[in-house]
Image (tube, rainbow, N blue to C red; front, side, top):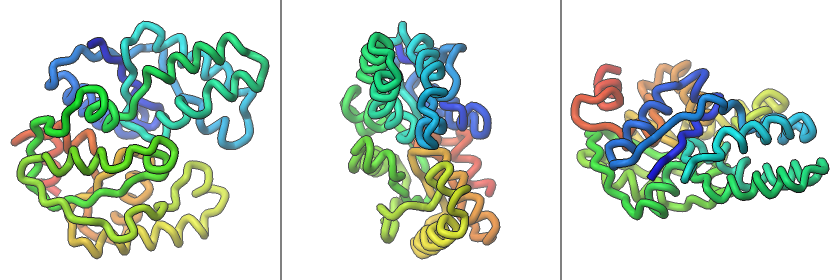
Length: 253
């Protein structure tokens, strides 16, 4: 299967190890992965702040960049949610019916990482090894927009050596929400405080999630508290085997 990685602008610009881990994982499972050079942002920032018209050329670029892929996999529930539930509607609303059809077709080939592994490849055991205490935060878009359910947890439970502990009030938002954290800083900070308290309560040394944006938000707060809790994307844990980067990072920290 020829898989295209949609890295997302956040992963590409701030946490490239997440994209590398996704590629490493999929290749270990026997698949060819390529990264279309023309990819940029999915346009979610523009759409969610009311600039749908400005998102149209971004969506067109996205559709063209991934036109030749059998499937598109992204390590982001947020971006997958935008592609699947916003792209076609936005361009159709701005008078581009043919592009809307193409966007809908591209969306039908697009999967968040845990969805792809469980639903398309039919596997939960990806051969990972991560001997650390971990707790999982289900991000809002993956949970509420995509409905990934317990797929990430099923994958994590199959990781060898892991001690997976339940996160209290797991389904509560971390307070990031993209521009929400900027426009409603005080509320966002209060929500973050609740989430950090829950994470620390678990005694876990590692917090994982399927969206780098939420992990950056929570991780920044945990770092300022000197909590000793580190954040790793789900892809990094699933790609981990003995002595690999993510496994060693957790030990070194």
